[in-house]
Length: 148
Image (cartoon, rainbow, N blue to C red; front, top):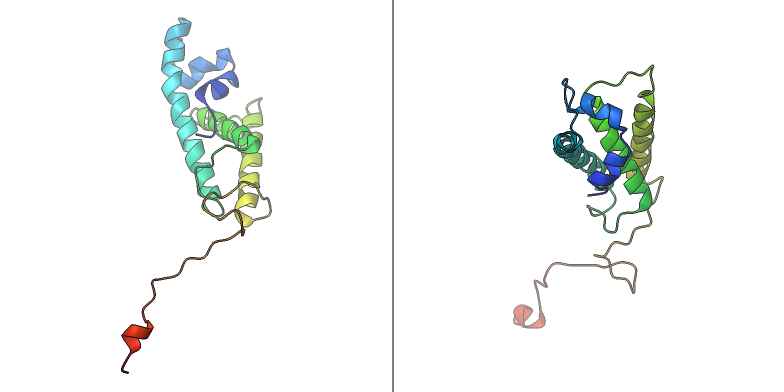
């Protein structure tokens, strides 16, 4: 995961929770938090899947350790995913969620195109040479060609 449920939850104001959970008001804070937790987890999983779709073109996924920029955009996408469940009013304060989501998508599109380099190390590459080469096993040898 590129972000945690606590990080995403901290980005959501308490007064928005009931709208995200459903159409009935839940006064008990513990009950409200218990109901929003799986919804946040699903939004994060969707965000990470979307991010991996872009990153997989250039990097082995999932990234570990997670670069700070990826963490930030993962939170933005997850929050957008939460609010898009109930509809985002583009003329209101919720437009901020759409703007942040759009910025994240532009960032990841540029990563996929190679315009932005995340400068993450690919552990499958050989560090000493900067690249590795694998070839198929040898088909012919001196002994197999002997007598031809």
